[in-house]
Image (cartoon, rainbow, N blue to C red):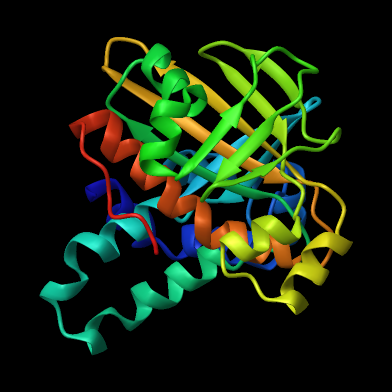
Amino acid sequence: MDEVFKALADGSRRRLLDSLNARNGQSLRELCAGLDMVRQSISKHLAVLEAANLITTVRRGREKLHYLNAEPINAITERWISRYDRERVHALADLKHALESNAMDSDAFVYTTYIRTTPEKLWQGLTDPEFTRRYWGVELGTDWAAGSPVVWRERGADTADPGQVVLESDPHRRLSYTWHTFTPEWAEANGIDGETLAKLSAERRSKVTFEIEDLEGSGTVKLTVVHDGFEPGSTVREMVQHGWPALVAGLKTLLETGDTLPQPQ
């Protein structure tokens, strides 16, 4: 965590985080235009923030877009917040809220973590029903070939729809599929009320992408989750932005320790 505290100690880097909180998913050019800082200085500060995992980057064509990443703040909160008086961690809590509530002008939810595992085991953790059931409570029925349908099974309810398909499948490197349909059966199984179901069903279908990077020689794999395709003010995005950190934490715990976190009831 030394890198996180070092990164946050600099006022210029906090300004960069503020800029991304106001408008997430900016390129280096856009960040330079919005801040009174030279390009070289911003590039150096971004490198420090990325090394601390406070931001993550996603390639879109020729541009590299920068997104806030809540994972290190979540880790600090979970490990140490109980050791300190609440008044002394208000700033940390405010930053955590800012990092998790960043859908103002960019709809994508982006979350990066590092897992002590191999790309092969991480791929299995993302695709094998025996694994996904343990940390997610969901089984995904598919052969994981691009274009293949995906059947979701959650709490005994099966969800099948022609729009639920695998979009990309590059084993041990990249996986993408469309999000599931929101059916009355799914809603009943998950305790979702009728009003919320109506809002979810009215939105266009989103998609999730997992990018896997093997940090060779370290025994660690970088996992980036990108969930996008939302409408402005999306109810789906509001739900997944709170759901993905818990799911990724469960996956990380399972792969690193063989144990699972408690499943929400």
